[in-house]
Amino acid sequence: MSALCMALQTNDIVLHIFQCLSPPQDDEPDRSNQRALARSARVCKSFSNAALNVLWEKMDSMVPSLCLFAAFKQVRGDMGGYNTMHIAHMLVEGEDIRAPSVWTLCGQPTPAEWSRFKQYATRVREITSPKDDCVDASSLMLLSQENNCEPLFPHLRVAIWYRSPSIEAGLLAVMSLSVRRLRLVYNDLICVPHTQWPITKRDYGLQAILDSVGAYLPSLETFEFEGLAHSFSLTSISNMKALRSVDLAQLTCASDGEGRLLEALSTMANLDSLHITSTLRADLVPKGSGFVNLRSLTIHRSWENVVPLLLAVSSSPLEEFHLLRLKLPPPEAFYSIGHALRQLSSTLRVFDMQLTGTDAAWSDNDHASSTTAVIRPLLRLEFLESFSWDWQCTTHRPFATTDKDLYEIGIAWPNLHILSLLGPDHRDTFPTVRGLQSLLQSCPKLSQLFLPGMDPSLYPEFSDVSYDLQTLVVEQQRHTLGDTHRLAKELNRLLPKLDVVRSSRPFVDKMGDPILNHPWNGVMEMVASRKQPPGACSSGSS
Image: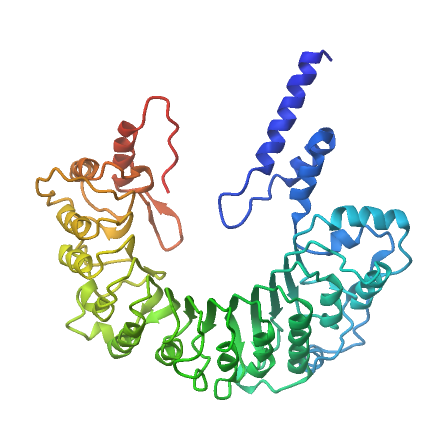
C-alpha cells in the first residue's frame, strides 16, 4: 500500500474516532457505535487511550470488568425448593438468599490480571451493580483486601446500586472517596400492600448502609432512592453533610409517622434541591428555620400535603417549584397553593406543572373557561421568569387560551423568559398574532414560547418594532394552506430572530404516530429557508 493510501486510511480512522468521541446531544448518551469505536482504537494506537476512556467511562454492570479475573465465574446456586412466597418472606426479613446463579471468585487472581484490571478500572466513572445477576459480596471484599483495602474503582463518581444480600459490604468495597452521586434501588417484588409492610431487618439494614455511606463518603453531593422503605430508615441521610441534592421522588413510604424524614432533611445546611412525593408529611419541620438554603423543590404524584410542604420551606430562598405527574388540583386547593406560594414570591423565578388530567371540580366551574381563570392564584408571583404547564394526557382540558389570556399573562409577569401553555384543547379557540404581539410588548425578555395553537384570522397591528423571540412551538394548526402561509409571513416580519425550523411540531395520535395532515411544518420550513444564506445546512423539524 502506498504512503498516500495509508495516510488516507489513517485519516478515515481518526475521523471515525473523533465522531465516536463527540459528546452526546441528548440526556442519554448514544452508545450504539461503541463496537466500531473499539475496532478503530485497536487499529489507531495513537487514539486508543482516549477511546478506552469513552468505552469504560460508564459501565451498565460491574460483571464485565470483574471478568478480567479468570477466576471470577458464574456458579449455579440452589434455591432449596423454596416457593415464591417463602423467598418473598426471606427477602422481607433481610435474610441472605442463595440466588439461582452467583458471580463469585473461584481462585487467586494473578499479578498480570491485577495489572490489566487496574488499567481499565481507573477509567470507570459510573457503574451499576447487576440487577439480575448476583455478585458475591465476599468476593468483592476479598478483591478489596488484595488491593491493600483500596476501592476497586478509584475514580468512580456515580454508583447505582440494586439491593442484594450483603449489599453494604459489596458497596463499600467498590466505593471511592471521589463518588459524588449514589442511587439505591430497593424495588423488591413482593405482593404486600405498602401500608401493611412490617418493620424488618431489611429496614434496619438500609439504615446501617446510610450510616456507613455518610461516614465513608464525606463529599457525596447527590443521593437518590427508589423503592419501598419506612421513613425512619432514611433519616440518616441528614448525616451526609455535603449533600446538595436529595431525590426521593420514587420512594414508596410505608409509614412516615409525624414527618420525621422531612424534619431530618430540613436540618441540612447545604441542601439546595429536593425531590419528594406528596405523601411525606411536614408536621415536625420547624416553621421559619428549616431548609435554609433550599432553592429547588419538586413534588410528585399528588397535590395532597403540597400546602404544608410549601409552608415548611417558607423561609427558604426558593427559586424553582415543580409539580410533576399529578392532576390539576380542585379550585379551592389550587387557590390555597397559590396563596402559600405568595410567601415565596420575592425569590421564586420558575413554576412548572406536568399534569395528567384535571379534577372533576373544574368541569363544573363556570368561571374556569380560560387559562388565566385557572392560574389566577399564580398571577401575583410578579417576579416569575419561567412558567410552564404540560398536559401529559389524552384528555382535553376544559378551558381555552385566547388573546386575552396572553395579554393578562404579559401584564402579570413582565420578566418572563419562557412561557409554555401546551396541552390538548378541544375548543379550537387559539390566540392570534395580535395576542402574541401584546404578550411580547409586555415581556421584552421572552425568548421561548410554546402555544397550544394559533389562529391566523387576525394580523398584527402595524408597528416598526421587532421582538427577540427565538423559539416558537405551535402544537396544533388546523387551517388552510393559504391562512397558514399568511400567518407564517406575519410571524417572519414580526419576529426576525425566530428559529422557525424549530417552530413546528407534528400532531401525534393516541398510538404515538405523527399525523402530517396540516401544512404548518412545510410552510414554516419554507419561511426558514429564505432566512438562511445559500448553502447553509438546515436542521430538521422537531
